[in-house]
Length: 168
Image 1 (cartoon, one colour):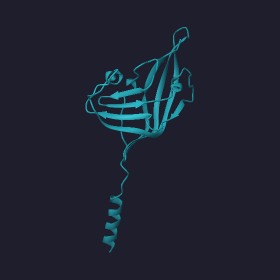
Image 2: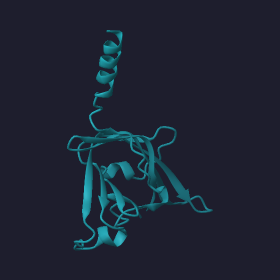
Image 3: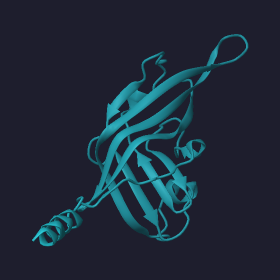
Image 4: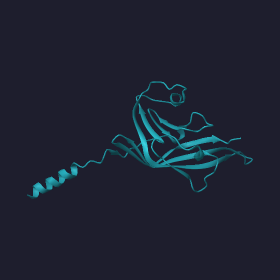
C-alpha cells in the first residue's frame, strides 16, 4: 500500500504542466539598437543574427528631457514589443527597405502581453557645454511575450542604447 501511495504521489507531480512558460535566455547586443530614421526613432530594432526584437514606444519617451535619478517608464501593452525568429539572418536593410523583401521568412513571433520599458536619458555635450544629442538607455523589466499557449518571460534585459540628435 505504501508503495502504491508513493507511486501515486510521484505520478501526480510528474504530470504537472507549467503552461508552456519558457524562462528564455533571449540575448540582444545593446550596441545593435537602431531605427530606420534617426529623426523619428520608432520603431526600435535590435537584431541578433536571425532574431529581432522590435519595440514601439510613445514619441515623448525619447524626448530631450534628462531623467536624472529616476528613469521614465512605459507599460508594455499588447504588441508594443515583438520578438521574431527568421529562417535566415536579417539586417537593418531588411527592415528599413521601402518594400520589405519576402526572404527570409519569419518562423515564429511572440507578442508582448505585459511588462515595463525603463528609459534613462543623458545629454551628450561638447567642450563648451552645449548639448549635441541625447543617449537613451532602454531596459526591459518583467516582460511577458506570448504566442498562442507559449509564453516567454524576460525578468531584466538591457535592450540597448540609442543616440538621438538634439532638435535644433
